[in-house]
Amino acid sequence: MLFDSHIHSFFSDGIYPPAELWKKIVAKGLGGWALTDHDTMEGVEEATQLWQKHYPDKLFVGGCEFSTHHPEVGEVHILAYFGSSYEKILPLLAIYRRSRIRRAKRMVELLRKEGYHLDWDELVVKYDDKPLGRMHLARELVEAGYFSSPSQVFHGLLDSRGRCYVPREEIRTEEVIQSVVAAGGVPVLAHPAFLFSDDTHAYVKEWIQQGLMGIEYRHPRVPEAVSAFLAKEYGSLFLVSGSDFHDDGGENDLGKYGIPLAKWENFLSLR
Figure 1 (cartoon, rainbow, N blue to C red):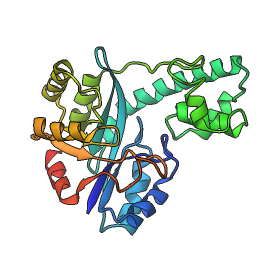
Figure 2: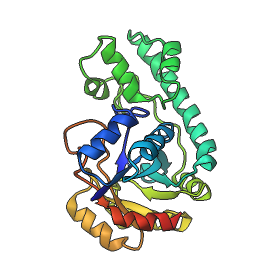
Figure 3: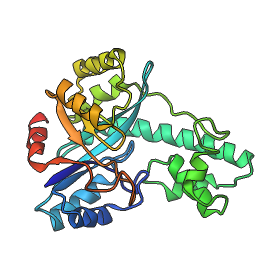
Figure 4: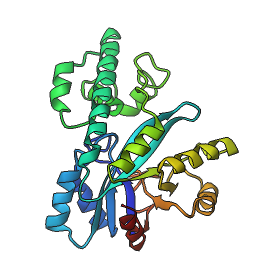
């Protein structure tokens, strides 16, 4: 049985609540999963309660996918996995939440200047427990009738070169790795498609010295040849694999990626 280590819920940019994700996990015959929403762990408690009450024969791990910045590599995502307690990471999550709110508010201001009228106060109430981001704004624009799909928004106004795009505030990769370790978590480099030269591998070695414990070596965005190389080069680390599931269909569908459930015993020993 496989364990899918990379799944998103509607607490970030996925479309399903934890209860629906649990049903899908069971239907796919998976042995367990990790909830890794972007820059938030708001859904972990709900998913944990459902696990304990209805799915004790499965395995669940609470986690988070942090968006970080490296001056040479650019955007780097760090998956962080925790055991029964993640209280010590809450201060870092609060920093991310404030950063996301500032960014989203600026994008809403730019959208309004372009004639797309989203009400900021209503958004704050609606997404009080979620890390408001581009996907949420894109869905709001679709709901308001301005566009037919979120992808239209992502390839236009909110594209990285779009008129209403605002870059993320930069939180350094090494800062997040060290914070996760200090909080009792396991930091893992997510979908490292940027590993194409000796220079980039040198950065990974630096992160390992700073506390990085694993690499997501299999992922829809990582070619099989690269996966094989990562397994060989970083075999001493905790190797994870996940679908990066957000919604149904496509290359990120549940059950396509994962690692044997038994290997998560190694994860438990790392914490």
